[in-house]
Image 1 (tube, rainbow, N blue to C red):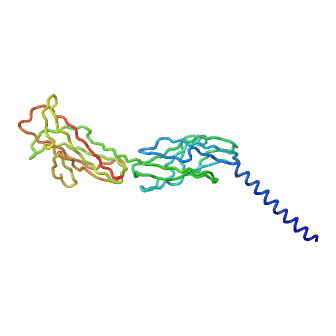
Image 2: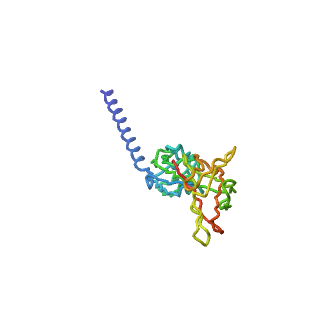
Image 3: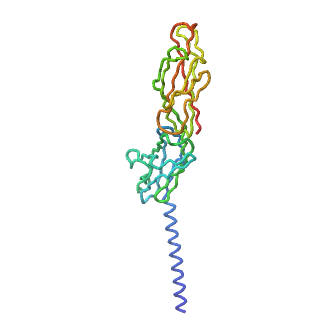
Length: 274
């Protein structure tokens, strides 16, 4: 009979202890909380960086610091590495890369922290949508982040302005122009075309069919093309500013052309394939 009483007492002790443990753990989980506003974040990024975005972290009943870092952002264009993402908090001073855990909330029981985030990109980051998330060191709420990298292409000319000298196309007097391109597009095509040249102070025109362009190749100059329709100057892929072509320009004069200065605009058009 005594043995039976001991068994009953032992079972009751185990059950009571388990219930007490569950109550204590339940209180801890319910009391410690991290709220993030907004619950997700979206960036639009173009060279060299996105605009700043704000996240607010609210901690309740914390007993340890809360830290966050970011995972690699993946998209069809590749990967944006974590070090490209920067965060500024009261604990980082200036902007710091999110490739490691950064303190967001201290161990103070109740705290609210405003943070600023941005992402840096370069000419090799292909346009498209990249997805990632902020993760904490203690299993707190994750923050989904989406980055849309926008296409950007810049064309530079050397010289930026130039003169064409009247000549006979049998022995043309040429003007040489170097062309530089910076682009993050997966593939781009560059074309040039001209408007009619109009005599300064008059209405007389030199038609676009009398303006010529050709490329310079390492071996020799290529065939002349009339600029009354677009001419493909170069094509390529993503990369920083670099020389992509050297062209020669000339225009054919006629006896009936009135003396004077003729002005017009050469236009360069870019076709991007993101």
